[in-house]
Image 1 (cartoon, rainbow, N blue to C red):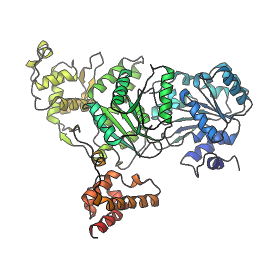
Image 2: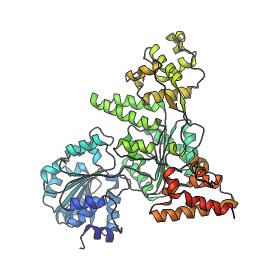
Image 3: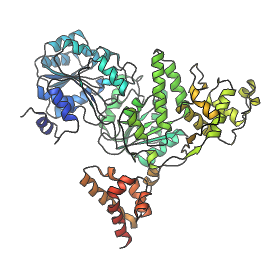
Length: 600
């Protein structure tokens, strides 16, 4: 069957077999059904509408907000021998006319259309007289009115169901929690659609989150020690920070380009084009950049400011490692980010329900930053996806954070908030605790408070860490009357009474993670034999299990094996990255390799 989905997959796209659950999705749409698809970035979403369009015949209409990428998407399809085109505001009149005729005559298999173009009467009339095979609504989370990538034109896409009731529709996104999924279904009239929700895990991405501590130094160390010559994306909250960071990185010898909404369309397109086609480019951007980017070899994604939601963080970090090779997601954040984003949410144009929702999303993001356990488990749980065991590929798994009994310090902090009238931000509260002598302290008479100076054994950074974690745990909240004042919540009462013990994590501000520390080490010539044997063992196990080598063990784990030479199970279990399960599956093979080198 020349038009069967499997034949198209193998002979047009060059893949042997479908990934799960691609085949079920494709079968649903080919049969004329509607579908809602949630699949992680790099999971093969595009095949879920491209193959049905080719199998059904007629023109598959793809609604996408990504005007700047349509030409590349169409070019890639044409290279595969697929007749494809696009309609958007970048086309001149002659090109538009030829594309419309090709749609009308059924000469195209796929056409990409921007949502604002689709809802025009001219376009709707064109489609009504054309042989349409399906409608694919890409980046469907854009329909969520208070989501992180809202596009107003998406609100009108329910007209597809009303105008073309017999044409199947497939809505696709990589980022949607349960609430956003419900909004997509409602606004696109997809109540009868089958839902296909894949696992959200991207095991090749290593998540690292650090407190800001001279962030430019942190960024420079990361780039020079780990990412020299690699392609990456750096996200900043403001346009000015984007431009300043890109200019500074250029001065440091990197190929860094800025990208934000206030740049001219031509400048944005030029920089995006270079990023997609050249190697070793670092793009420094606001969140205006990246949705739909299909560059497979992005080796790192850095956030220099806290993202406003877990959805935004997941989607932005997901732009790294689309080729399945290791990629690093580094986030640097501080208390000032929390206050700034909290105030932005409060000052937004949304109603009170929206503002509460934005605060909840922000605190969920902050919670992922502050946890002491596996970050991936918490990230996936946010999207309703469970991971039974720690991932072994986030900073908390690679090096468990230190915690300390902070009950006394927390009581000091909460008491200071209360005794100063719950009218001040963290900076002033820290000055009170540390016994500062400044104009503001004297103005309000705060040197007379019983908590004045009682926290002088802790540094200002340590106190900022405490206040940040108290906000993350819901013991304090940020007041939004313009000053970022901290207020107590009901949850803090047991701690103030001394009835509850609280442990907080210590920030790692001067230590490198084991992965980074090992990565900059050279392997001594006399150790190369064992190093190569360990890598060969890993490769053989990876082949036997049908997984990439890094899924067995990371290089950092092999380097530590090389250094410590474990010969017993309990010794191997002490190696970073080796858990009970991996010890059971692979431990004997690696110990045999080490033993062979130890006794020969």
